[in-house]
Length: 275
Length: 263
Ligand SMILES: Nc1ncnc2c1ncn2[C@@H]1O[C@H](COP(=O)(O)OP(=O)(O)O)[C@@H](O)[C@H]1O
Ligand SMILES: [Mg+2]
Image (cartoon, rainbow over all chains, first blue to last red; front, side):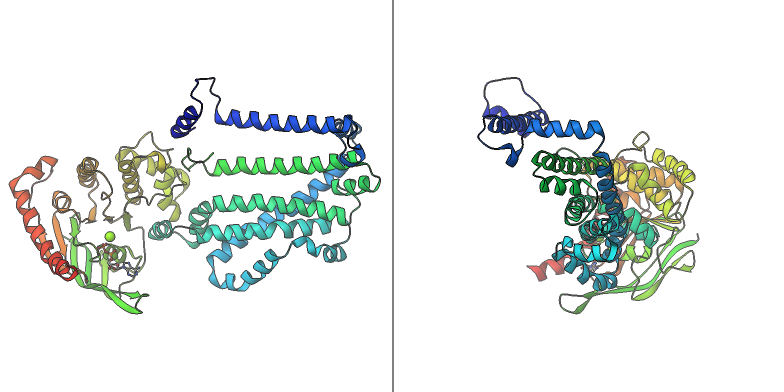
């Protein structure tokens, strides 16, 4: 917590009271809001104001969760969705970062590939789903493809932006020390792109998850998205909500992991202003 | 005395994108530096000092003339020269140790050996115990010590320094000047030092070369005949002041026409 910030707070509240850290305050307020919403939701359904067919209720969703995890029935779906996400996303990283570096480094390559990337960026990649299913079938392969396409574009674009933002003075230092092009790329350009890169990775993760959801809802035989569709067809709102929650949890988990990794790579940045 | 570095009629024109014309930064610069000699270049701002250093380093190719290092023509950067850059040229994502080994990594020295050599020079510049700090955790003076260690660890034939202390406060600067002399005396390197501070140039150097206003030429070369080892007390010596007056006048002759033209 910065000094000016705490001064502002004490001005707003002149009475000296128990001072919580900003982080604790944020968590407390956040948790409070969530609990209040859940209670309201449960209350609206319990009082009979709204039919649970439309909005389910926290206790009903919990019951489904206990049932699904208890019997283990959900695991095959989670497994399929996770594999689709991981394979597509990791492939997008492995292709996206080097590609972003290369088009950032070579003007020719940028002229060559830039327009394709811009066009692909302008259109939601899930639009290609019917084609991808035609090419790769209804199984996981088509989902790999749509997840990959969703994630790779933001990763390429963010990496490219990071390369362009690099500082000439560091490249000058590297050249003075007779650094090879490879060394300049890995030791100067790549570390400089870290903030851009992680913005791209996070955005790409969202796109990847979207690919899993839409792909499975559109056509599939397994996966959490598939479970949601089937439950929806049976008016099993509780299970639909359970599926939605699973995707939410996945999104939060991926973002948390990426934030952790970013902090590790960003240890050299002065703390204090951010956070 | 053997000649270490020889600049022979160096000229440099920058293409000027603004006017589509050309900017002559250096014109017919010739000078030579002996082995173990400490030579400073002073001159008005914009006269081409950094440009000249970059040509010696091989980062820029001269449009006329030739640089010889130990008799061999220079065309690109090499480990026989190392630059101490102006402030904030440390790689911020590397620690002190990481910065000092950078140049060794570039020429393929084994990591264990690189760390060993780096430790020696980190100690020499007085930063033992700070190996794992990032540059934002260091004072300006400490950052320039790292910068110096990063160049020294290459064991170059000539050390090229571009206003390395310009961004430091006056006290830290004097401290660094004294320490640089100690390190130079211990290492026996040849040094080409660029500064716009006259007292710094005199205090450090065997010889001070005064550049003319742009296009830069060698206006005069002044031998500094003051005993070594030198301490900061020397800056109070009347002989020191005499050198200061002389070099100051030389630079004034260059600044005056410009001031008139501007005013
Ligand atoms: N890359 C460049 N392109 C065009 N002009 C340049 C470039 N670098 C420096 N200059 C110009 O060349 C002249 C000399 O610059 P420099 O060598 O940096 O001077 P000094 O270090 O003596 O202050 C200045 O007028 C500067 O504007
Ligand atoms: Mg300069």
